[in-house]
Length: 93
Ligand code: SF4
Ligand code: SF4
Image (cartoon, rainbow, N blue to C red; front, side, top):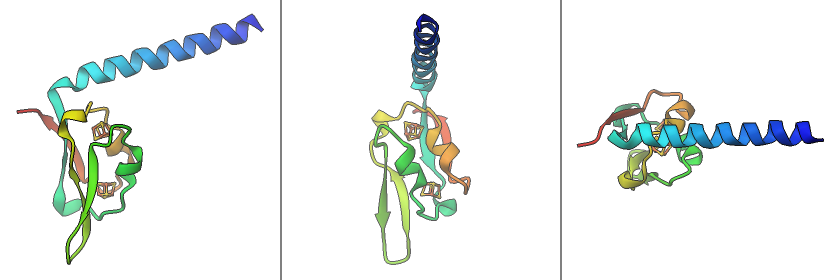
């Protein structure tokens, strides 16, 4: 039983450390939507834990935009979810 706790604790620690490293690495970067590539499927919205992205619809189409830029940790999760190459990380200005 102790082995289970040790392995579980180790995995939890690794997860926490990787999150801290990712957050630290993301301080100088921010997500940007490549508008022409976005088809509005919203996979990225579901993936982002920080509610950075939101959708907007006009008469032609639905697409996403960066609604809360200050919340972006540049984790890249939304990029991994996007199958249309419509998201990229850029340097913060
Ligand atoms: S996953 Fe990509 S294509 Fe889909 S809404 Fe997000 S940015 Fe647009
Ligand atoms: S990089 Fe991470 S925090 Fe930023 S919008 Fe994408 S999923 Fe959200």
